[in-house]
Length: 322
Image 1 (cartoon, rainbow, N blue to C red):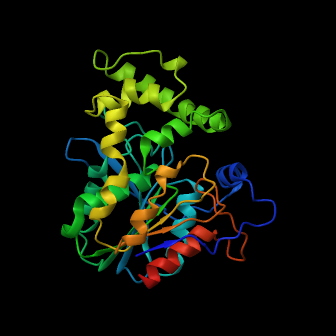
Image 2: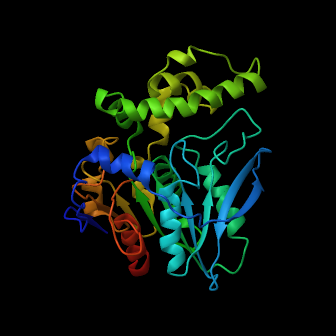
């Protein structure tokens, strides 16, 4: 489709710093819960996924929202997007990764950046509901990587009702993004991620003795250490590098066959140049890459009368024009 180097996003006064853009929405933004209907579905391997939904009077259009690493459907970025889309007539299905809905999942395996089969399970469920004639996919960060991988895997065989997608703040190259998060300037984020991940592994240690062991969990402070010890072996990868290589969404972009908008801010502290597929976007018929100069990671703060952020307005605009 196109490369959009000059974006319409302009940060408000005081929001030119990437870290403030990243932290402010997560800490200070409060969104009334939009997706108030919880639905639990079974997975093919005997586990479960919790979906949180919101409906409109129309019921012909559905947006499926995928959150990021150690997030949930309750996150302000998910609820903000749900509110913006719900306002213009979209039903919402925001789904929680295994272990992210407030209840531990049943099996040893959890979720990871390339678990596109989980999104396939969600879509199999919602596409069995014949009211929906148009489905859009929205993915944030890790969830955006997973979503883009799914779209590439589906290629031209994708359900014709799935007509467009928006991916925001996506680490399209997992290895370089993981390395970037080791930088001292990102230690606040890395510490936060590890503080969420460690208790989940401790729960697995208690419930699956013999299948998983403590490999210095308390000393781990990087994704390389964590993914080598837990993510990769639990989910069938040789090591962290094998996991990152096989699951990075950049390699799946050429197979995507629906209009897709990828929005990655130039100043995103989580991303490296490898996460901006500029040359591909210039030549692509289906994928547009928009690179706002500011915005941080899942930021794009904006103060408007209706409370919507720029990323939400931009997503609504793209889906209406696709």
